[in-house]
Length: 283
Image 1: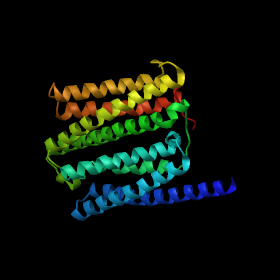
Image 2: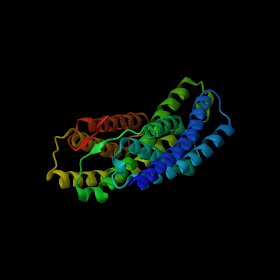
Image 3: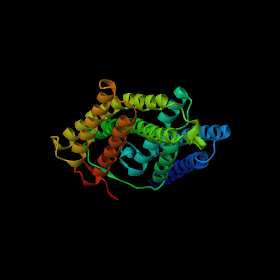
Image 4: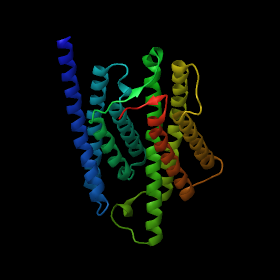
């Protein structure tokens, strides 16, 4: 038992070391944001990208090491959940870069990922009620799928904010710093739309997995539970956002405001964990 405890302690320490290294690389991304807002140089983009790549690699190693030593319920810890969300946001950000060759969403992404990774180092724990069958896979599937949907929503939200800033600068006719080298408005709008298209299936599948867990744990699904109600509302607004963009032709400012509202609602849904009988998070 003592040897097992020591081994687990060493594994935790190694995971924290890798996560600290990832945090340091993400810190370079923060520096990129602070400097790029006032002046733009190509070398900043290269530094930020290499920092993102390396940070993501070390971050992935830290997550795998933490999961390996924590066991099947590890994703129920608040610290690891935040870490996984930050990692997935960075994955989507780099996918966007590979397609559009722009680091502009990094203005929002780098500070957010840095904060989530920092929370990942805090060691905060949470308690999620679930049956033994749910713990075997449904819980991990639920959290991973939902977080993938959240990650795509974060990128869409970032693109929306950038669109609004860029539009303001263009109207003011005073381009400066990073904003003077942002992609065309149409490209920024397209990033936001495609991120939504990617994230919606993940969000839908994650909600279905969550409802299965609730059914297995409690024998019924209480729609009036704050977490379930707000999650379903977020999904519905997400669907409305996609519909208005796909069928109604909403673009630009209206779509950006709606994407920001959807993101805000997702934050409220996450905060509902503290008031939910399904997700009881301990501080």
